Amino acid sequence: MRRKTKLIHGGITGDEKTGAVSMPIFQVSTYKQEGVGKHSGYEYSRTGNPTRHALEELIKEIEGGHAGFAFGSGMAAITAVLMTFNQGDHIIFTDDVYGGTYRLVSKVLNRFGLDATFVDTSDMEKIEAAVTDKTKAIYIETPTNPLLKITDLEKVSNFAKEKGFTFIVDNTFSTPYWQNPIDYGADIVLHSATKYLGGHSDVVAGLVVVNSAQLAEDVHFVLNSSGGVLGPHDSWLLMRGIKTLGIRMEEIESNTKAFVDFLSELPEVTNIYYPGLENHKGHDVHHKQARGYGGMISFDVGSGERADQVLRNVRYFTLAESLGAVESLISVPAMMTHASIPKERRGELGITDGLIRVSIGLEDIEDLKEDFLDALRK
Ligand SMILES: *Cc1c(COP(=O)(O)O)cnc(C)c1O
Image (cartoon, rainbow, N blue to C red):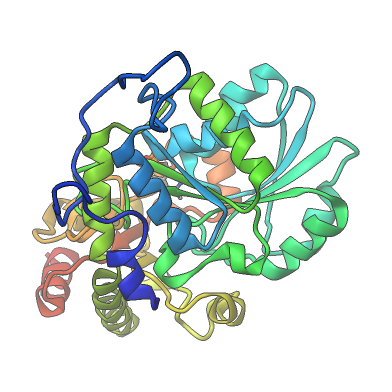
């Protein structure tokens, strides 16, 4: 099955009993048992629910893994994956990891003795230098948020294998339509499905795909023990979103390329971060491991005041956190998504006050260009 077909016919489609073409929403918490311990595969919906299971089978197939799991948010998915580790374990993270992940690791999980080092994972030497005798995993994002830094999946995976570390990839930005980290040796892939997978700014969800039976058992044990599962209705919404992932990503790709060309001509705009630009650091690596560049662009408009002016005056770009929707979204990372990172550290990372991040949607590209230009030159 090719990729676009798999998005529609993968996983468990429809219902055999009734012929329903769409997977029914099993709005149910518990299941009648024939005898004690004799059941049809479902006992209680925290442990497993047929609608959620259909989604889990679908994401497993489109990422090419061994098993999939659906959680109530991306952060719940990340929490569950990190809770498979033990007190005293050490994990190496990408330095400009999603702000919520940074907060979880540095303000919550540290209290339970999970140790972390944040390094620029686009640089293998920095990863090697961060290894301790307690290191158990490497956790990366590629491209990153918001500077679109690229990490070489194959190189990091080979290093992780050699050392016996688990290699975890947050694949939210690229989506499984453009990038499948398991093909390059990742052990665990996770998603904030709130973004491109759902795609319509109407559901908060997280997905995990693992590449082995042992990891599947470990993640399911935490899922069932801690209970941050996705409900049946949201599972169904996500499956509906995933059916159009291919066509949305293709259209977003061409809109984004056109918007980057447009930005490149504006004297007010500097430092365009987009992996599709040939002078973008990591462009070649990204090109090798992904089939598309995605819909995220960051760029500098010079100052926090000008960024604020743009954000107050755009009409078609919605000022909002989040990304990956049919609507184009715009934000200032320093004030919004990355506000939980101390200013000093933001400076080190290159997240300036004038840095704008856009997530290109499905509007007519001419409207987006006009809108942005009007707001910039108001
Ligand atoms: C949004 C996001 C998350 C967190 O997901 P939620 O669904 O908001 O909990 C994690 N990683 C990345 C890259 C994200 O963009």
